Length: 307
Length: 258
Image (cartoon, rainbow over all chains, first blue to last red; front, side, top):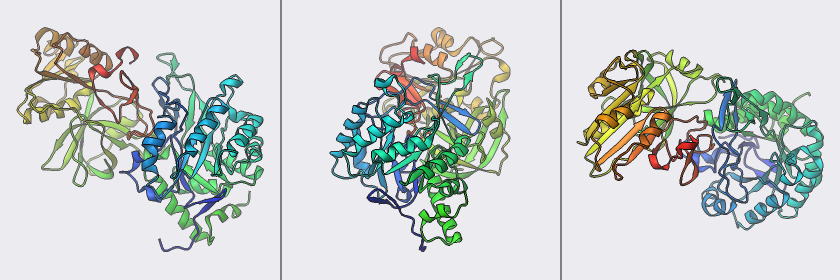
């Protein structure tokens, strides 16, 4: 593009080609969008969550639209780690972008086993993003991500398994995000990403029950963006590792808010459903903004804001 | 599949309940098959947020145009109904699996309930162009809902109304049970409300008469990524209406879970 803005972003010992990733659960395993956008322009594909065993997912309906948002109740429907390695990774590793496998589990052991299996892949996996919004069945179903102690333990245990970048994806459904982000850093995380979806509920007043197959689901889309920006700001002030911001980014302006709030990189989620070329457009927009602001590296953007 | 901006050729009301939208569909946009769908970005604002899926109701090859038939049900389709010829609209398509047509197929019965008419019209046209003897049965609640469209009348439909104000009194399933000639060489196709499709699949028929149905589902991505449009199926637990569907073999669907 004939520009001298450095768009790379360092995370742990590695560096992403650019700060625009696509969020887990919104981009499948990459191939689904192959015909609709140039995957080479994406900084990182955060895969659909991978669990130890394949999961059928929740009973439908799984999606309900809300004002400027959607609530989903997919239930981590996925192919399982073995199938991922044999059938999804071969395509992903042909791509120039970073492939970051999103990992989920219902016990600490499950997370560890998934990462152990993924570590057997010789190439193609750039790093891991750990979804800690899942309920821990051994701790009364309370989400891992709401308890700093569990976060630190889980992160530390995963840290021993891999030298690759380890990103903990935080839930916004907590009292103090700073506490949780610090726990991830203390456990040895290379970055935190946030926000996962907010718990939400829609009631169908004709049927007098939830509009989803489950009672509640996860709210995403532009409706949650101000929450995401605020939590990105708080988390970035609490830790010295990079923060990857997401939540309702639809365009460049939205992405810039996250970068100015303190994010080193961002993820596009729900917007992929509406316009699969959003990541590409946002990347171009960020680059132009950097040029205009006269910063030589995208990671310097966060210093421009007076917050 | 391709995402592109295309032009609205025509967008008009047909009958009391339906609209017909014609869009330019020039190369290099891939040619749609009956049963496939497109998604439309309704608004550049965030309300409504998601694209809306619509099944193709026709493809006019010489002029490079496609049609969809839709019903105004909510905010999204309300906005769509107000769009004018000449305006541009963002589409992705064609998506999903089409209705299968066997090599040596001779006979077909195609059934549409309400707004399920679109893909069935397209299919009937395709079947007849291959010299497959095709009976098209259309059901709606009442005479006023019968589409006022040349394409529809040219398809020589058997019309059923629930209240008997036009044609056969009763739904298409009742018509088939009473009058349609279904033998072991007939392939049955259906699109419409779930209760209609469910009774269609439970219809007494020769074992070799296949039934293919097209399902409507809420979708977020439309391309197989989000797993939002899950349909309960025998072989997979859940299948994606947008990718494994929207056309399914009738015996694949777990009807009691629908």
